[in-house]
Image (tube, rainbow, N blue to C red):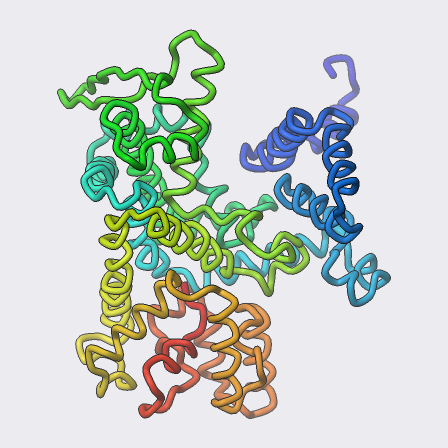
Amino acid sequence: YSKGTDAQKKEFAELQVSDPYEAVASYVEPAIRRAAYARRFGDDGAKLERVLGRMKTQGATDAQVREARNVVAATLGSYGHEYSPTIAMLSESLAKKVAGRDSQATIQGLQAYQNVRLLPLATLSSIIDPLGIAVRTGGDMKTAWEGMKLGLRTLFDGSTKADMLDALSMLGATDEMSTLAAGFGGGTTPLTRKVNDFVFRLNGLAGWTRATRFMALHAGHQFLIKHATKPNKHSQRYLDELGIKAGDIETETLYLPNGRSREAVKLFTGNKARDTRVQHALSQFIDEAILRPGSTQRPLWHSDPYMGLVSQYKGFAYAIWDQVGGRIAREWSKGNVAILMPALLYAPITIMVELMRELIQHGPEGDARRKDWGPDDYLLMGVDRSNVFFSPRDRAIAQSINDVKNNRVFGSSQIGPTISQARDIYSAASAQRSAGKTFEDALPASPLWKRWNDDGIADNVPAVAAANLVKENV
């Protein structure tokens, strides 16, 4: 480089990446995925092929083997790398025609725009997230509450925040922006990452997400200590789920500059195998306590990058159903009645959030369409909107049926915010919808000044139908 001409140096400089986010996304993240693949399946994928071969000899069909291969690809982020498998089911030539970085960049850009347009109140919807810690602990409200208090303290106490950030970084779990981008979409190109970064910091979601992970981390330490030192009839099951033994848990007292202290599981003892198990257990606990939509929780087509406009925002419903609803059902089946406490709190907290949203959007007079609602109507809405008691499939079917009942095309409520907006623009252009309202809907942070689900719901629509008709407005 030092011996090159000025023209060569200039050309070389254009190839360099100055944005750290772009460097991480373009080089570090793929390298990490590649290393994970090599560690699990061998550098050439030989281990994976042996596993798939055993599936075949044990009676698996070609379709099942192909599905397993696709699930692995989705987990590693390579599903649909060449072209869209979903579109290919309709037309492989079309899938190959629309494939490419430009198409993916366009999809990412539209997703980022939807985040700008629809997420000013997203942190309200995340107020309920810490309740997942109580569910993951099996209904241990005391442990969950201790975690919540410490996490809230990090919002105001710099030394506590620095301590928890260091503790989280030891587990390699500090990138809340990647977590948010995975859930909300639009975060893989340099521009869309900057847009998402701005949106999530402005609406407070970045800070809140980090705080909830601090909550889960502290609760995770207390959870492991409790079930290793004061076991109950569920303790062995909990430790087995996290791949850890009671003998692995060694504790230490950590002192902070502000004079506070906390008891924690010792992460580094010199026993590499033990340390790795403990760190993986804590990371797993955090990811299972605080929603982080992943490919294993969603339908396979959600991992198709070319289907992002349809799947945007839907991952959270699947994650809640899998992580929260699934855990509640599992604990109940094991005779753990303590799980009922956090389970029964989801509907009331959801109602509180919706009332706060209604106050922000409609003022003290409230939503005129709900003026005749009673406690039972709000309770039904809380149960429905919590996403805990009905599967995403059942909710999608119910919403699609309501589409027909309200003179809409069956399934039109499931097409995603971008396509829904395109439909509204077409309706406005053909004089079937107010152009002013359509323009208002397209503005950044539109939920702050537009009426929630402004398409119009008759005052006499039943509560559940009304709740199901509400557009996905995170």
